[in-house]
Length: 611
Image 1 (cartoon, rainbow, N blue to C red):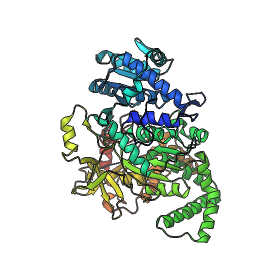
Image 2 (cartoon, rainbow, N blue to C red):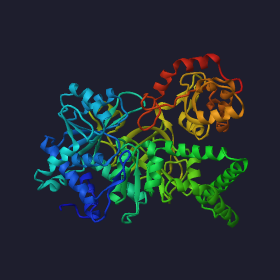
Image 3 (cartoon, one colour):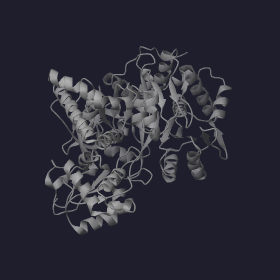
Image 4 (cartoon, helix red, strand yellow):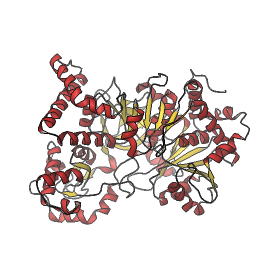
C-alpha cells in the first residue's frame, strides 16, 4: 500500500487517514456504531479502507472531480466518515450540513456552495434534499445512507459502494496522496448568531496542523485498543470533526458513534469511553441532575452531598495552587469519593480519563466539581474559522475559568478594544464567495479577528469575557457582558436556560427557562394549586421562588449588572425554533423578537423595587 512513512507527520487529511490505517491495520476495531434498536457493530481498519476506496471510485465514476463540492446531510455514523474521506481522496471538498437546519437553510447552503452531489442519511433528511432539488440545477446526484430511504433518482449508498467495488482502483491511493496542504478540504457554513451564513473555507493544512498541534497538548495515549471516544456532537461542527474524528483516527483511538443526543447517557455506560468532546451544555445538565438528585433526598443525604462537594473542591483548589493536601483532608476526600463522586464516574462507564470542552464558556464551578470527581474537563477555545482550536487547558497547564494557553505555532493577542486576535496555520482561507466579509476579519499580515472579547493573564492563560457583538450597552452607558452572567444562573438546579437582554434599555432583564418538573414537586410540597404548567409559572409564588434562586447566584455582581426583571419562559430555547445555533449559542435577536410582547410588558412594569 502506498502511504507516507509513519514517522513523517501528515501534511494533509489524506495522509492522516491513509497513514493511520497503515499503522493500525492489525487492530480489530477502527470504529463502531449502534443503529436504533440494534447492536454495536465494529468496522476494522482494512474494511474502512476498502469502503472509502469503493465510495471514492464510485464518486469519480459519477463525475466528481478535483475542486468539486459534495454535501453531507447526516447525523454521526460511519457512512459520514467514509463519505468524507472518499471525497477528500478525489481532491474535492465536502460541505457538511447540520441535520437540524430547516429546509430553507439547506437550500441556501447547497446553492451557495454549488454542491454537485449530496448525501443524506434518513428518509426525513432525504426529503429535505428532494424538496429543494428541483431548484438546484448543479445538484446532479443524491445518495441515501439508509437502505430504507427512497426517492426518485436517489442512489442507495450500498449501491454506490457496490459500483465502486467493480471499478479498477490502481493508483487511487497514490493520487489521493498527491493532495497539497493548501488544497480546499471543506466549506463549513457558520450558523452565526446574526446575519447570513458564511461558508468557511478550511484547507487540508489548516485542519491537519490543528490535529498535530492538539496532540502535542492533549494526552492521547497510543495503547492498542485501549483509548475509545464517544462521538455525539455533530460532525457537521468542526470541533467534533477535528477532535473526535481526525485526531482520534490519527491517535488510534476507537471511535464510537452515539445513537443520538438522547442516548448519550446509555451509550456512555455501554461503550465506557476513555475520552469525550462536548459543549458545556452537557456538563451543565449532568451537574444540575446530580444536584437535583442529592437535594431530593433526605436531610442527611443533602448534608453529605454538600460536605463532599466542599471537601472535594477544597482539595482541587489546593492542588491547582501547588499546595499540599493535608493528610486529614485527604482522608476526608477518600470518604467523599466513596459516598458521592464515585457514583458520577460510574455513570460515565468508570474509564473516562478526561473530557474536552469547547464551543462556549464553561462555568468554573462546574469544572471544579468535575475535577473533584476525578473527571477533569480540559476546556479549550476556538472557532470554525480557526479549524477550530486556538487554546486549550492541559493537565500540566490548567487554570479554571480560563480556556488555556495557545497551541504550538498559534499566536494570540488582544486588540485595543479587547477583541481577541489570532494568527497561525489553522486560520481559514476565507469565506466562500464573500471576499469583502473575508477582508473584514482577516488582516493582510494574517491576524484573524475572532469577534470575542478576552484577556490574557500574566501566566499566558486566555480568558473569554464575551462576544463582541453580544455586549449589552444600557441607555446609561454601562457595558454588561451577558454570557458570564447567564452561565452563573444556569448552574442552579432550578434553571434550565437563561438569556439576558437590555441593549440600549435603561436596565437589563432576563428570560429564564425554569426546571418545571422540579417546580411541580416544590409546588405540591407547599400545596400550591395549579391546573397545568402555564398556571404554575403564572403563580406569584413561583415567580418569587425563581427570582430568589437567580439573585442568589448573582449576589457578587455589580448592581447595574443584576437583571431588574425576570420573565419565566416554559419552553426551552431550541435550534428548531431558530433561537439557538447548532452549536447551542443563543441568537438574542431571534429570542428578543419571539418574546417581544412579554419583554415590552416587563419594561412597562418597571424594575423590581428590591433589585
